[in-house]
Picture (tube, one colour):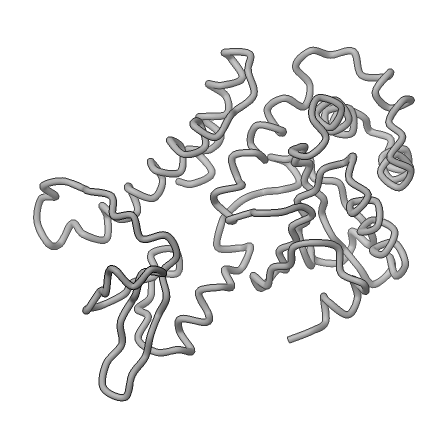
Length: 252
C-alpha cells in the first residue's frame, strides 16, 4: 500500500508540473500512517477522531516493574502497550525497542531499481547490500562512490538520487543521471561532480521528474535528516559516507 500511495501522489504532482514540496510529503505520509493505524484499531470499534499530540521524540523506558513511552520533554508518559505498526509487533523491553531502529529494506516493498532508477555500484550479481540516498552534486556522494568502487567485486549498493542540497543544478544533474543508459558515464560524472556532458545529452522536460519526486517523498518514510543516507539490507542506517564501505557492510 505504501508504494501505491507514493506512486499515485507522485504521478498527480507530475501532472501538475511541479516538484513535490514538504507539504505534499506530509500529506502523503499522514495518509499512509493513518491507514495503518486504522487497521490496527478496527477491533476496538469505530474511530471517533484523531488529535495530534506535540511529543517530538519518543523514548522507551523500562523499569523493574513496567515499561513506558515518554515524550522528550517529559510532559507525556504513555502507560500501556506500545505497538510497532510497521513491523507488527509489541515493544515490551529494551531489546524490542532497540530493534525498531532497524527496519529491513524488504519490509518496505519498494523496488528501488525500477521505481527510482537507482544506480548500481559494484557487483550486480550479488544481492543488494544497501541503498544510499544521495545528492549528486555533494562531495560526500563522490567520496561514497569512490569508496564503494574500491572493492566493487564484493559490493553491491544502489544509489537513489535525492537532489536536496545543490538547488536546481542538483535537480538537473539527478535527472540527467536518471535519463542516460551509459552506466560508466554516470559513475564518472558522480566521481568528478562534472555533469556537463551528461546534462547536455538530456533534452527531455519530463524524464527523471517522477523519480526525483518519489525520492523526495521518501525523506519522511526513512526519516532522512542528512545526505548521503545509507540503509543496509537489514535496516542499519548511516548518515554520511563511511570511511570503509566494506567494513560498514560487514559490521553487526
